[in-house]
Length: 121
Length: 106
Image (cartoon, rainbow over all chains, first blue to last red; front, side):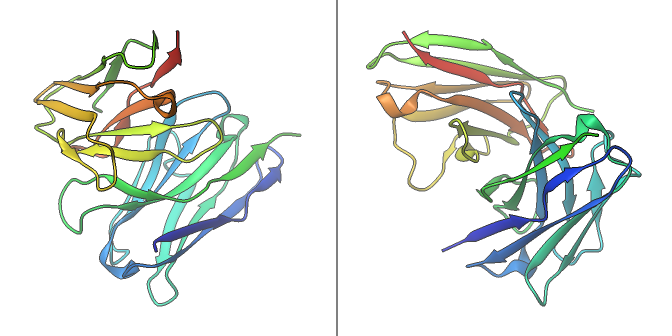
C-alpha cells in the first residue's frame, strides 16, 4: 500500500524557515517524480514544486522560486521542502504527491494527508 | 504559464442527476488534463487522468472527455458521496490547477 506521510509543519514567524518532510513507502520511490501541492485555508489547490526521479531536475512555482528548495533521498524514500523567507501568504496545508507515471506529463495518483504551515507573528 | 478556468464555480444538484463540469486551458495542452475530487479536510483524490482514463477504483459514473483546450468531467446518476469540490489540473507545462467547482446538494 502506497503511503505518504508529511511532517515538519507548524507555526513560524514571517521571514522564518521551516523544513517539511514526506516519508514514502509502498512503491519504488526512486522511479517516480514527486511534487508538493499546497492549499491555503478555504482556497483551491496550488502546485508548489516538483523533483525528478533522480533529484537532478527541480521545478518551482513563481510564487516560491528563490525561497523554497525541494530535494529527495532515494536511499531513504524521503522528500523534503526547505522553505525560507516565509510570508503570511505561504500559510497553507502542504501535500506531498506522487506522480502516476515514470515518464512524460503525468498526474498525481497518491497524496499524503497534508501538513499545516502557519506563518504568523 | 498555462491558466486553467473551471466552470461553474459552484453547482447545486440532486441525487440521481447528471452533471457536467468544464475546464478550459489558456493554450492547447493536448490530453494532459486530470480531474480530482476533494472532500472537506481530506486530500484530493484522482478520478480521471489523461483527459478520459478512469483511475482504478473510481466508479464508472465518472467520465472525462476533451482535448486541446476544452475538457469536461461528467458525473452520471449523482450519489450522496459525490458532493465535493472538483479540480482540473494540466500537466502539459509544469502543473496548474483550476480554481475548483463546488458541487452541493440541492
